[in-house]
Structures are given as C-alpha cells and as structure tokens.
Amino acid sequence: MAEETTAFSFLNLEGTLPDVIPRKKIANYFGGLLDPRSMANMDCRGVGPSGRVIVGRDVVYPKIELLIWLQNRTKLPVKKSAPQPVQNSTE
Image (cartoon, rainbow, N blue to C red; front, side):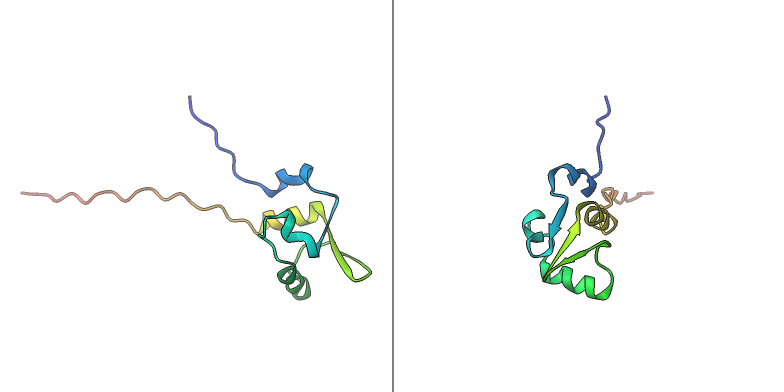
C-alpha cells in the first residue's frame, strides 16, 4: 500500500493560535522563526502580513492573515533523485 504524504501548511496551525498575535511575542508563537524587529521592517516596506492593527503602541496581526502570509512565503524543498552511476563501456 502506498504511503500518503501531506505537505506542511501553516494554515493547519489555525486552531492552535489566538485570534490576534502581538508582534512583540511573535517569536514565542513560531519558535523563533519570526523576529519582531524583522516583522516591523517588513511592515515598514509594505511586505509584511496584511491586516495588521495598531493598538496604542503595539501591533497585532490577525491570525488568518498571518498564517496566509507565512504560507505564501513557504517553499518546500524539492527532492532530488540520487545521481546515477556512470557506466564505463568497454568495447
């Protein structure tokens, strides 16, 4: 029986996260994958997640917009086949 493989998707994390994620705590939710300062820089350049909300001096991201943004930035590695051995022909 063939084993079915499922590609990783950040969208699968939707049920495990709060509705909004504070920028200053984003590293805690994603194991250090995202840094608050990097997120601030991306927001400033206009390439961060859409829908961010400023609350006083804090920025929060709606969960689904953040997950979609992460998923769109994700590239899964392509499995390369092993190189074929060179056959020497003796004639």
